[in-house]
Length: 221
Image (cartoon, rainbow, N blue to C red; front, side, top):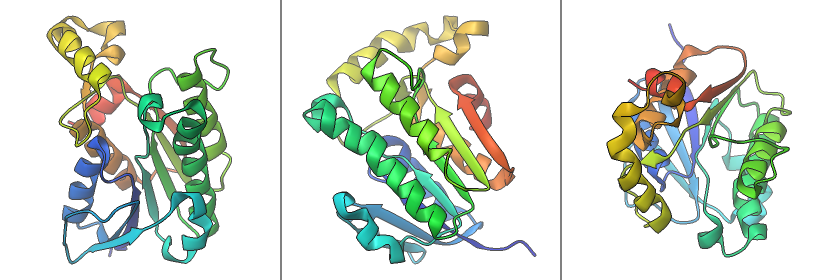
């Protein structure tokens, strides 16, 4: 008989995280889903355990962060964060602290949303932060780490991001032309990324995996 597991999700109020939370709650794989966030979500479900936390003091909540599979969908923009320092804190520090705490608590898998172009040696600040996050997460002793690098994310967000909204309007009509080597640059629905994350968790592979956007699209069909 397959073991029924506990999932923990960070960033469930975002585009990918919102879709992923719904999938986790419907999945027979999980008997409990722990959601950590700054605010309580307007959702009640018998599987759902919501933990409202201060991410700046994440270690204070470690006792409530025990799960088998960790899904991290944390992320912001420099504009919303207000500074490069605050962006770094959300997209690197919070993510790596989550990995450190949950690994110490015995988590088996860590699955995280990064970004296309992530590179710890990049001259582009955004890409460098994402790359450093990937590097540091992979240093934790999980059995499995899955890193997802989607291209431009499509879908309805609670928060409006003018730059991404404009880019999606430009890129959507061009998607059909992005084939072969260009396929990894094709915009991708947030729901597709969420489905790919759950599929990867169910596969229960051991090792470290980085999934480009075209691969994510195939996994999330």
